[in-house]
Image (cartoon, rainbow, N blue to C red):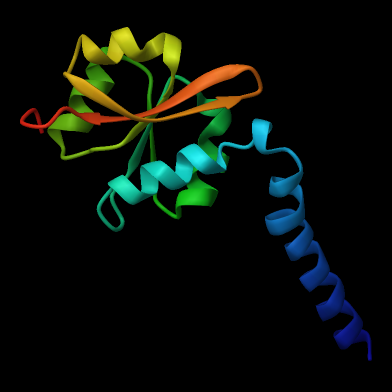
Length: 126
């Protein structure tokens, strides 16, 4: 009986964390951007996250991909040179990324008042 109660409680908590909470505050969830990035990356390939380490857990959770935390132009160069494709970043960091590689914005989302982007190398620049 105790095992059944524990299982039911665990199932409710899982539903609360994965279904209810993300649906309650779509403006504060990185889920849409993470999902967009995951659709652009090869299976198992890392998703780049440029200068926003606070989102690393959410991006990893919603994509199921490893996340490469990128903190510099050198890191961006390394990410793209190693075959990385999709990067999640704040819109005010776009010029920094484009100083490294010509990129195309493929998704935009507002999260907590900040515009978040998903970018990929422009066609022919990969």
